[in-house]
Length: 161
Image (cartoon, rainbow, N blue to C red; front, side, top):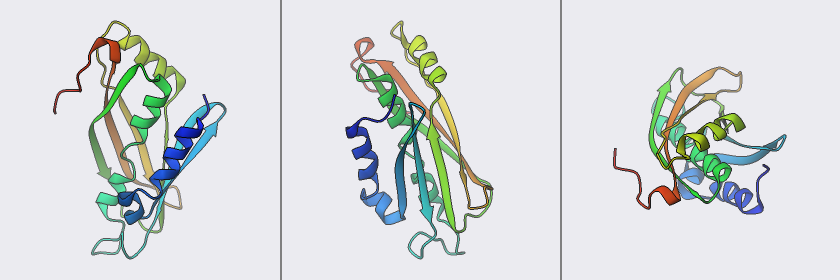
């Protein structure tokens, strides 16, 4: 399903959201053959580089934060609760220049989550993406753990980690 106007607005809003604005992160919504994807990029600037002149690790982690949660929430619809539960980032090489990451969830994965939560249970899917530099080399690998349950199955938030 393509992005709704509200979803596109939210992705555009991320570009002026203070943590993203301060880090220099730019996000854009991408429709790919009826599927949603979000692409983010961050140029190396004096305000987002660390002591040794490469991308600050916290900025690399934050540029990857909400996207899988938002995409899954939009794909599943309003009858589901979706929460970020945990994140892991593994730095592979120093980030220089512009770095990018792409977030998309295959339709088969969405259906797998629907089936797993159909009986009222929760599921904790893991999603992965890579942050790459201009030459396509992996700068960091990001893993996100989400928490998903149908709203009618429970009215509570996920337990604290």
